[in-house]
View 1 (cartoon, rainbow, N blue to C red):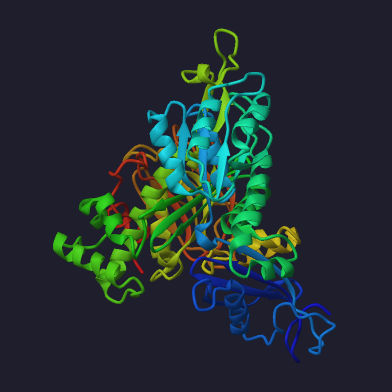
View 2: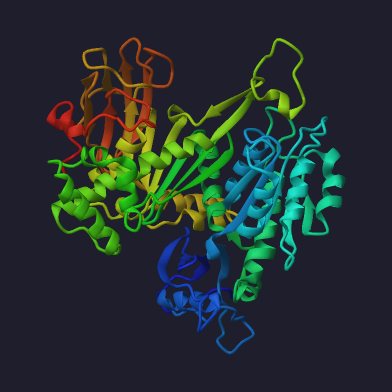
Length: 592
């Protein structure tokens, strides 16, 4: 029988592992319905003297404390038990490092960049015919960056876009002589043969369907699959111990970000909404979004909560950072507190000042990371032109295509993870970090992935989608439901009235919040209330200005938040002060 169970212990059905550059994290799943039985971690063992990542995995499995047989054990061995089904994600070696090349920087090169990020890649650089660099400097760059993969795109179907062949020549000039790096061409089919002729002597060339077949069309699925195959064959195959992972895995190893993306796509499809997920780390802040079925991911390097907290302070500015602190400290006190965290990155907050630095750092790191994400997370749509719609890439720079950036009013679910959220002093502090940095609009649920399990659930969904989604929902912590009109409401200009459907109850009584203010209405965990929300004329909760909305609100750690503060552009460094300076005491999220 696959898996093992001690007397009185549920049988382990799956072991899922995420093999990172520094840490290998494992979870054991079992029971009916499936649930998390145990979770453990061990340093990844890719360095001397061990140089075998599988050893770190074995030790992490042992740390689960479930008495599992050694990985790879089968029924035919003396133990009488077989190791459970195993699935792996990996970000070892920093993930798949991709050099992107396209014809026009803002068209096919940008699409290739989005496709690479959506497949879990790390972008080293983006080359384009119009990027302003000389051919020689670009060839030098190709030689120096040493990518795991090169992705080339260019030309719409029905056109040729021969200029991309100039970029292919540059890639040939800069090719490394000691290895044939994989190269995927996902451009105009009419150019594929010429591209292969130029590059096949230097690269392992693979051809995929055009990722930008038309001005307002993107087709990422085939190139995503091709990138995954390269990840398996090139990155993981060269990782010490990979052969043992490959032999044990029930399905192929996938990049960790791709596992997260699978989870988010399934949640977005099930809830019929756009989804935003954020991970505020010590050195970087990751932002994922799924909108219209397309996953986008950005990694904001040097925006973080320990190693990068000093840079977060510099990028945000002293005044923006300390506006979230009560009372705002003087500059010297703040700098000392921030750099104390930088030199001791594992230090856990103990004093009031340290907790407030964690809060302010989380808000500012995520605010700036989201601004960067929104610049990349775009979808395309055609625009009616006065003349015939052009098919040549170079001719659509000034019209013909509308780029639609991620709209917060379309985001119905926000998932937060990272230490400053998972270990916040209180649910209210975690809520403030998400609320003040993201500034949701419409009706949005805020939840936490406190155990960083999203990549595991996406991985499991490849073999048991229903169980993966049930597990995901069971392991997300409901923080709050936020109701906020698009753009907010200026003080003294309207408001929103709420009424429980069926009349007042112990859970919720009718009330109203005025423009410029915020109300926080506690709802006990396990409860659920249908609420009718009636905005004043001119305020839009998602169904048009002045139209009422009825929504089911589940009980959560903080409750129902109705936020009518004015929304400024969240890309601006100047956003309203903390909630404790707005509205009645009942709205004060600064409390613990």
